[in-house]
Length: 238
Image 1: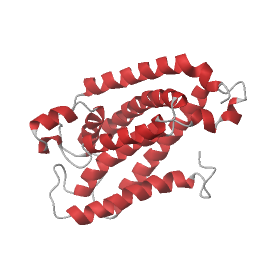
Image 2 (image 1 turned 120 degrees about the horizontal axis):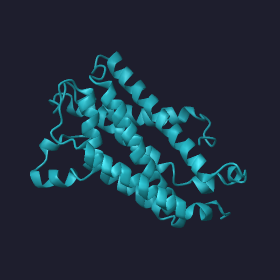
Image 3 (image 1 turned 90 degrees about the vertical axis):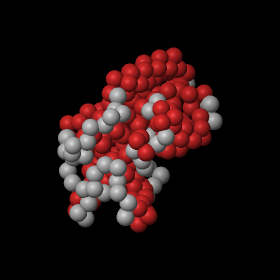
C-alpha cells in the first residue's frame, strides 16, 4: 500500500494522525471557550466524530485502485481480488484503530478527556461501521473499475458526508427540517453511537441502531452482488 513512500507503512499512521491532530489544535484554539453539547471538552466531542469518519473514508477510498495496483499479484492463480480487498480493508481498519487509540492516549496524557464510559458499545459500533464501509468498498471497487470518474466523485460524496454526520455539531443544534434530512445519513447514527459509548451518562435521542443495521446489511448485499457480477472482468488485464 505504501511502497511509494520512503516512510513505508509508518506513513499510514503518520498521515491520519497528523491530520487529526492539526485539525484538533485549530479547533481547540478557535473554540476553546465554547461549551460542548456533550462532555466537558469540545476537543473530545470533535474527536469522537472525526475518527469514526476517517475510518469510513479511508476504508471506502482505498478499495478503488485495487485491480490496477495489484496486476502482478493477480497473476498468482490462488489470489483473487476479494482476497486483496479483504486484506487491504482489514489493514486499513486496524491502522485507523491504532491511530484512534494513539490520539485518545495523547489527549488523556494532556489531561483532556478520559477512557470510554462503555468500551463494549464502541467496539460494537466500530464492527458495524467496518461492515458498512466494507460493503460500500465493494461497490466502489466495481464502479471505479468501469468508470475512472468515480475516483473523483467519491471524495466529493465524502465531503458531503463530513458535514452531515455530526462531527462538529449535535443534531439538536440543527433546525428541525435540516435535522430530519441529516438523520437519513447512516454515519450520523454511527457518530451518535460512538458518543453514547464514550461519554458517561449520554443516551442519544436520535440513535437508531436498526436503521444503521439496515444500511449495513444493504451495503453488504449490494456490494456482494456487484462484486459477483464483475469479478471475472475485473481480473482481466487492462
